[in-house]
Amino acid sequence: MMPSKQPPRPRDTNQLAKHVIGVATGQASDAAPEPTGRAIGGHARAASMTPEQRSEAGRLAAAARWRD
Image (tube, rainbow, N blue to C red; front, side, top):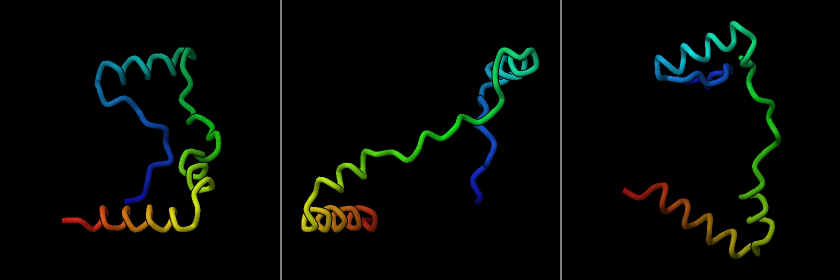
């Protein structure tokens, strides 16, 4: 399934109605928020690890992914 390019809408009927009224009256924006760049948490962690530590972390992640 392809990810939607539209901004997320509230699922609750009342929240959706409030959002629609806000957009119609100009009090709320219907545009998707601008991306601020990629998250740095994992990248910073990987940059601070040695190649052996990255390999071990990858091995543990793969094992967790394929665990029954």
